[in-house]
Length: 114
Image 1 (spheres, one colour):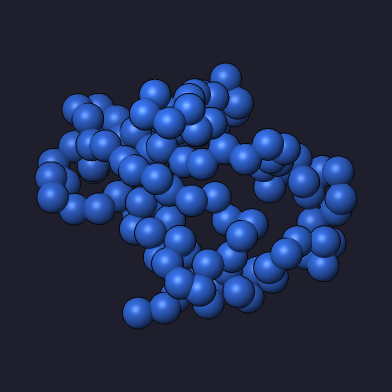
Image 2 (tube, rainbow, N blue to C red; image 1 turned 90 degrees about the vertical axis):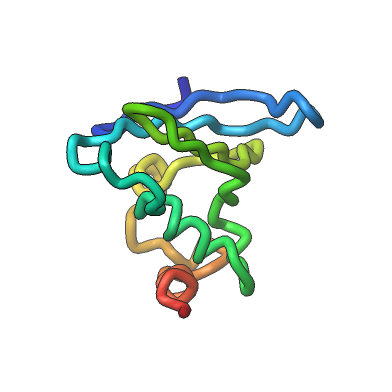
């Protein structure tokens, strides 16, 4: 297990078609999501937007996702080495964005593009 949070868990995996290391994120649907058939989960919609051009190399790419009863499954790239934002902030301080290869404003701009 790579990590766990309030909405689900993330596991290390390998894509069988080409051996690519991936992160497999299982997100539990809350009761409000069970009847949302055909709608994109917010995390998938946001990941799709920040993964479109121009991309920030510091944001993981969403490779694919699945809608299963009771949960969503997201398949993300898993670079090595990789570090989650919480651990990065613990080790470097949350105000050290200059060490990232893109700024929060670039990430925000990517997410807010139409």
